[in-house]
Image (cartoon, rainbow, N blue to C red; front, top):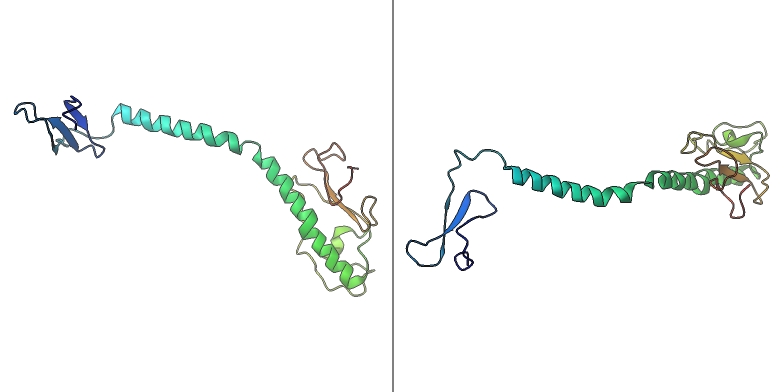
Length: 174
């Protein structure tokens, strides 16, 4: 097939093979033989450029998808803390003691027994974690926005309001 295309020399992917047209005998078929590897060391410039181009194309396709995902991951982590981890601990506290910790007792009542807790069976959390932005979660009981308690993070800007707060209620932001 190489002879039919009129190609005199071609390199086959394992670069130690070379095919060539048997033009001396006029048979029109290709032969394969070994290249002398003693003089062939390393990669050619074209091979290196091809690898760099391929890596560049892959990076240009992947990087735009990853940019901006870190902030989304922080918001998802804060939602998981508020709606699952801390909420379950607060519900267990309420189940044992008949009420949620007061605002003054705060989330610390989940790790250390407060004076007002008679049937405390904790600790309900190993430690009180910070939100993904390094700030304390805000706890208020009784809550202004939910029947039991309000639990929220001020979000990326660290300031109350602004539309980026992560809360345990579904209505409008504080």
